Amino acid sequence: MALSESFFQEDLHPIDIVEHIAEHHEWDFDRIGDDQIAMAVEGQWRTYSLTLAWSHHDETLRLVCTFDMEPPEDKLPALYEILNEINDQCWSGAFTWWGEQKLMVYRYGLVMAGSQAPSPEQIDVLLSAAVLSAERYYPAFQLAIWGDQTPQEAMQVAIAEAYGRA
Image (cartoon, rainbow, N blue to C red; front, side, top):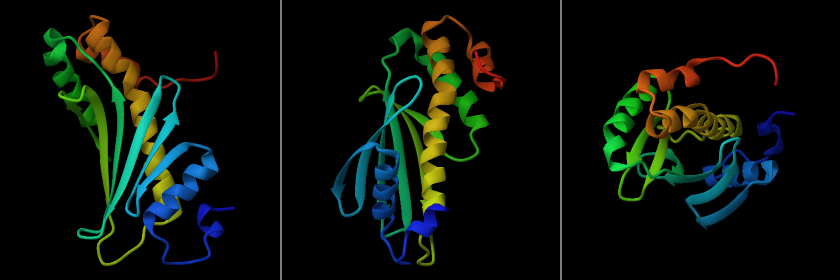
């Protein structure tokens, strides 16, 4: 059954849909307000914090996926270089470094101009893309910052496709 088949009303608020998806996946979440929700999603490498907010003003569902990272000051040039390398690979969403908060951030905005409503499938893909991107590039960040590899060498782990199971 498609996600949208479980919704009977056409005009559900986007954050209501996110809450339903979080319940479906059994993710811990907190409905911060009518237009905002925060949740924790367990990945292979770590737990990611996801916050989604709906803006009526510009009809955009904003997603922010974060994880803690405390790179040494002397590794910041490598961090910025690998951020550029990674963002060249990301076609939807982008990573940024919030130094003051010591957070790596993946951001994406789903624009629904013209009073459109996002579908449950669109939101589910948005959530999955955020976690999958964080999971894919987390090892590259680690190798570039703490593994003494160049950003180009560290990117090889993110670019390589895994086949089979260990």
